[in-house]
Image 1 (tube, rainbow, N blue to C red):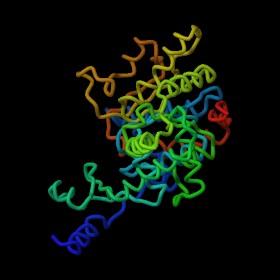
Image 2: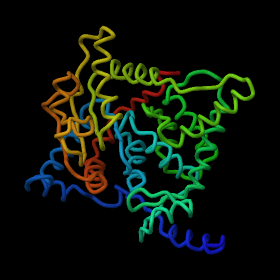
Image 3: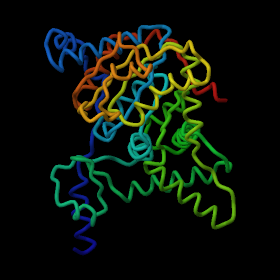
Image 4: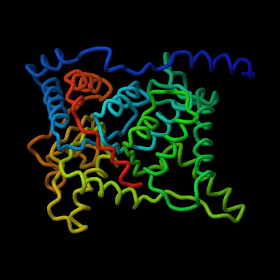
Length: 349
């Protein structure tokens, strides 16, 4: 194919943008109420929504949003942003992909696209189109994200940074140069909601940070780096100071284990009186039989001293299909309107 044909084909495939759900535009309370009188996943979702509302209504509860998977690319990006804007979460633990490749990426003005057809993946590769199931990303735009991360790294003093620190710098960049008002990274910066990515370089950030380090090494200059231990220490510090905590978890993996481990870490540091996470909701499609962290039930986490079993709920469902209902219900019940703003990001100066 010649370049003109390539450009035309690429434009055809990237013609329909993913539109992110607006939880304010509909009231899911009647649906959740009805589901509570049903069975199976419907009832599980209604109970999970009730637990999230209890977190919001508890004046002592700090709420962590925990995100793994590709729900941000799939249409939940504005949903997560609204949770920050409306003071419905106080801290975020996520995969690097959710924060960098998806939210920061759109904050720079780029888009995700619906795959109306899925041609051979080698064809997609030849057109520089990346695929997430039925969603497309323009690889050239993603590389702009990589290079932007590199430029942010170049602007920082050469030392170790927690992912929270670096993501705060990303939020500041979007506030000054961003193209999207409704960015989770930007709003978290503005509201002092700390974001932690325990595997930060497993994302577009990794490419930009490697480029930063390689170029600095060639010049014989010191470089910045990501301090994963600082992530764990800072997040544990929030847990110790917060006391009562609740978890709203989408998917599993590293973010789920990382936030749960803060209880054990606090104990190791001598805080014997640290509370287990009082509330916990997890939405996942993972099977429990392989012993993986993504699929371990919340009751299992209680055996490790991480999560209390009284107010926990597993919901085995694709998160993009149920999170809009849960979040819309909680938004319209309005417990967030009287919540104290915690601004945990401020404790790090």
